Each structure stands twice: as C-alpha cells, then as structure tokens.
Length: 561
Image: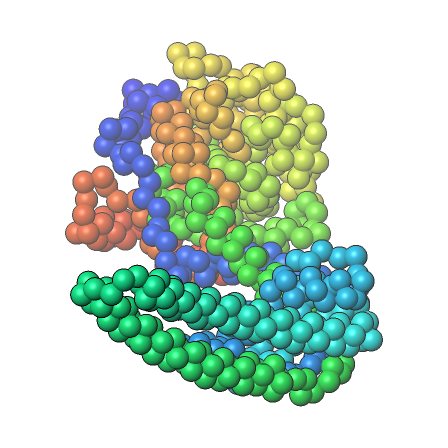
C-alpha cells in the first residue's frame, strides 16, 4: 500500500472522486442571448456569406435570362356611377373593381382573339385610381406593340361594358316605374267601371251613397296617378341626364402608349439586390436555427459542467493547414497546449512521470500536441515513451510508426520509444498494472517503461468498452474537447470513464473557443450557489488551479522542434 505507483493508486485515487449522485444530472448550458447568436453568426460567416453571394449570382442570372418587361398604359377620365348615400371615394373604387373584373378581362380577351386563360390575362394588367375621376390601366405583354393593343382594347371594352351596364340599370328602373303607373291606371279604370255600372241601376239612397264614395275614390286615384306620372317623368328625365353624363363624359383621356422599360443595368441591380437580401436572410436563418437546435457545447462553463473538472486552458481554433508532421506544431495555439500539458505531467515516486491525453472528439490536434511534448522532453535528455492507444495511431504516424509493437524511433536531434497495441488488443494493459491488477503489460513494454522518465499516452475512450485500462498508463489525464463537436452526454461519459478507472481528471482543454466567451470554465459543486462558486474559485486560485501560459516556453519549444 505504500507503493502509490501501482495498483493501490487506483484505490486512493477514488478519494478525490466526486460521487455520481453528487454531480449535476445535466450540464447547464448557456442561455440564448444576442451574444450567443452573434457568436454563432461570426463562427459560420462563411455560410451566410456564401448564401448571400449565391443570391446575388442567382438574381443576376434571372435578370439576364428573362426577357425585359414591356408595358403600356392608358388613362381614362370618368364620371363615376353613384347612388345616393354612398361614401366619398366609393364610386371610383367600384369603377376600379369593374375594370379589374374577369368579365371585362374576358371581353377584352375575346376581342383580341388570344388563346389565354381569363384569370391569367386579368393578372397581366393593373388598374389604379389616382383621383376620384381618373383610372390608369397598365398592361404587361411580351412586346411593346402587344402591350399597346391590349391597353387600347381593355379601355374600349371597359367603357362599352359600363355603357351597357348603365343602360341595363336604366331600363330596369324605368320598367319598375312604368309598372307602378300601369297599376294605378288599372285601379282608376276599375273605379270608373264600377261608377258606370251603378249609374245604370235604379236610383236609390244606397245607390247615391255608393256613387258618391266611388266618385271620391276616382278623384283621389286620378290625383295620385297624375302625381305619379309627373314624378316618374321628372325622375326618368333626370336619370337619363345623369346616365348620359356617365356614358358621354367618360372617355379615354390619354391613348395607350408604351412605357419606357427599365435599363438592363437597373434591372440587373434590382434582381441582384433582391437575390442578396434573400440569400442573406436564408443564410442567417439557417445559422441561427441550427445554433438554437444544436446540443453541442462551446462555452468553457458548459464544458466544465459536463466534464466535472475545470477548463484550465482554452485556445482559438487550431488550423493545421498544409503543414505535415511535426511542422504543424509551429502554431502558437499548439505551443500553448503543449506548454500546459507539460505543466500537467504527474511525477511518480517509484516510476516514470505519466500523463494521459484523452481526446473527446478530434484526435489530430491532441496527437500533435502529445508528440510535440514528447519530442521536447526527449531533446532535453529525458527518456520518453509515447503510447498511442487510438485507432489508426495518429500520434505514432506523426513519428513515422505504422506497425504495432514497441519501437525505438529516431527524431532529428533525439530518440524516443513508441508503443502501439495490436489491432485485436482493444483494451491494452499498461505498465502501471501488476499481477493483481486489471492486466499485465507485455515484457518489451514493461522494460521500456521501466527505464523511462516520462510515459505519455494518447487514449480515445469508447463508452462501449469503458476506460479501466487507462489506469495502467497514467496517473492523471487531461481531456481535450473541440468546441461545437461534442454533446454534454459525450463529454460527461468520457469524464466518468476516466474517474471510474481511478485516474485523476486534472482538467479539460478547450480548442476552438469563441472570442466572445467570457465564462470562467469552473464546474461548481452541485449544492453551491453563487457564494459557493466564488469560494471554489478563490481556493482553486490559491492552489494554482489556473495556469497562465507564458510565451517563453513556446519559444523554447520552437527552438527544440
């Protein structure tokens, strides 16, 4: 039990392990805000920028591909049809609706002899009423001459239809009035017939009374008929005058003439502008919606919450570019990660110092950083073993090793040992296990690690296999998370596998952090409120919880590599 470099370490490592029941059930992601949306738009500006450019190209293409629009217009001066008690402005609105009706469109279409649907033809022209007596008909057609002829026919058919409508209405009104006069005439004739019939009967008091009553009725009926005939005659005369004014005083004020089409440049700019707005709106909408629906974590606090460990270092996106092999380690972001990993190495009392780098998602950058750290220590005279436990051996390939086994590799200026497990060894045992442990390492590996000063392991953990074998390779681990690549569930699973293996989860490293991320990257205790977070932060600072990376180690690594 005194040898803390072997299996008993897995037992005392649980002293620092936070029980599953004491950890937050779910990570608390950052609230959606304008800053969140702004950061999402900044990250994916290439997408909405491309959509905007595509909109401009499509709009310009449409402007070039489609024929120019030919239009003609004609102006009509009208005496609108009106009725009593009608609101001001209603008569000209009714005239506008009649001109736009399918009835008028059908008459014009028949006159033109076009084989086109009435609805489609009606949609090809517009009717505007700039004043209460003026209508402007604007027609769109395949050619300028067609537009002029259609405008002329529309104006003519509209005026003819109005005249017929006025005549029909006048006939109906006069017919009703004539029927009323005829009815009064029949009533008067009936009274006169009754008087004539009574006059032929013998004279009596009853006869005389009846004749007197009928005479009064005849007089009243005659008076009513005379008044009605006079009123109807006056009304019909005034109606004819008004109707004649509606028909005669409505005519074409400005004959149909073509409108000057837009210049090709103006048309091109209009369509390109419409495409720009449409493409930009679509691109921004896609970015915002996908950001709101995504469960991938980006903020330091969110990652720390899911990881259950602080995020002690975050860097911007690492762009490997066209650099190959160790040449890509010249990136300033890679140097910062290497410097931090060097400070996170856990020394052993009776064995080599160890560190496991656990990539949660992307393995390329963690592999490059691990190899860079190994080469740097080897050039300083340390005996280093690099164990690549990931599928495909990304770290081993950086050192030119493609086959499994324990091999000594010559790097310019130094030498180190690379260990790659066999393809069928899915949970390779490490050199820190003994006979009572989970497994025993192969003799070549045990011998290489026994004489080493530093053992660095790159291990991507699979939830279906667990991570118990990680304790055989390192005493402490650093989880490397790429912003926007992993969900909270994935990060939490890796964290739990590291802890269940009895390995200390030192911290997390976040790659691709947003420039606008102002979160601290500390995972608060489940029962800690605002005061609890502040207390933990101060305690962590006192223990050197956070690491400020100086640029001087970067220059030293630059010289080594």
